[in-house]
Length: 303
Image (cartoon, rainbow, N blue to C red):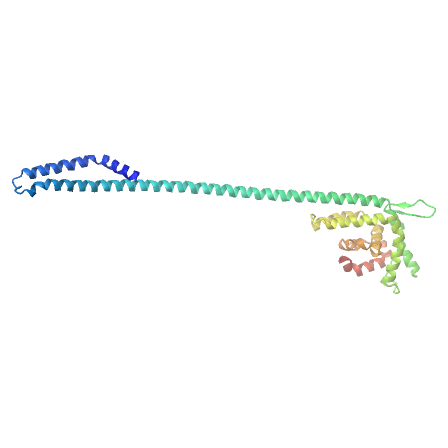
């Protein structure tokens, strides 16, 4: 209401000359008509009044049009201002959207770097644990010994070379070529008989080698359970461990895995296929154990 009153006042200010001009013209016209010879009647003497009101009405029309024009101008300016504000707001939103995308990308990259760092640390921790277990295994390996009557005990990896109880087994079953190439198994030897013999011999040998066999099983168990390490990397570590074995040592681990006491090593022995690396005379000396391993490998993998 206040704005409308202000607009009216402003319109009167802007059009006062028109208003004054219309009044003057109407007054003059009325005066002329009053004194005119054609003004014979009393009613005609009020014609100037009608002219005055007509002029005022015309002026009011002009003022109204002027006010509407000003209002339309103000509305147009307001719409232009709103459009500019909307454009500025859209620009700000687009800017914020770009900033949000940039922040999201940075957060994603930081998350990837963090995940990578965590994986590296987990891999490092797994490696440290494996190498600590390997050190414990190597220490247990150095303490393995084979007692010889009237002689100093043989210790370390060489002890496995002297513990050749499988050729003794062949001797006791009537074989006389255990020192050379063995082409066929003894047909009277069943798996149960072989297992019984291995259990007896391995039990005697484990008295001095038990810590070694236990540490080796723990080493492969630790390697197997570390999900942070890829299969390829586990195989590489297994190859490093295996390369440190002598042929007689691999044979001793095979015999231990066959025995009841060493059954916990069977899956790891088969999974990393340690028996594959037996060769030469040692493989020939332990042909029966190799045959047994090949026949039961799938069973060991699922044990």
